[in-house]
Amino acid sequence: MSKKRETLIALIPLIVSIVLLLMNPLNGILFKIDQNGKFQEGPFYLLYVFINDLYYLVGAYKAYVYSCRAKNYQQKKSYQILGIYMAVMMIVGTLQDVFRQVPIFCVGTSLSILIVYISLEEQMISIDPLTQLNNRNRMEQHLFECVRSQDLNMYLLVLDVNRFKKINDEHGHTQGDLALKAIANCLKESCIEKSDFIARYGGDEFVIVYKGNDVEGLCQRIHTYIQQLSFPFDLDVSIGYAQYKKEMRKWNDWFIKADKQLYDEKKKLKGR
Image (cartoon, rainbow, N blue to C red; front, top):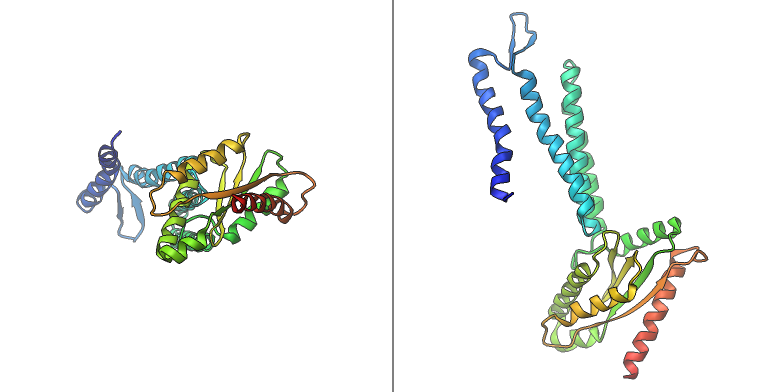
């Protein structure tokens, strides 16, 4: 279904809702207030409520589906926040219809907006502003969670841009920043598993948590994507990786082992 057609279909309930509201003062088909000031439902009141709840219900469902399909943590988190907001609004709206004497909707709306605001602030704190990847703070949190899960089918990859100082010195920091952003996009394209986690460790260093059986294939994809980039200088990365072992009690132990292999790769590069 095309986006235009999907938008038109989504507008139909809204148009029906507006028409019902405009007709209500004439015939009270939605509601009316009697002489004693009491609220009385009209014949189409429940339909009106259902139409409004339908948007929240479909929105929450769509957000859930998109969060399941998300390729990185930021997208997944954004859709989860949206889904929570939609679900809360639908719940408080339903409760308001049941308990009409209590201002539930007003309080619920304020609470849901506060939850969304705090969640978005927390998400922004976890994102690297240049590459839009997870930052070091989020990386440490994720590695801690991985070690606690003790899943043996995990690899930690530590990547470092080759001769990055030379790129900055000879071509300027603007070109260096563009190179980092391009490499970040290559890492996103290379990591095809939903469970893969990508972060910028700092400077020109990146980290990937890979849950799969072909870590060599992932490394090859990364090199292939980066070598296809068009820059006025050679651009590639060195990669060190380590599989998680149960004896690794702290995430630092896991990181040090992967970083050690990266160091060995950099030594080979200098030797060549």
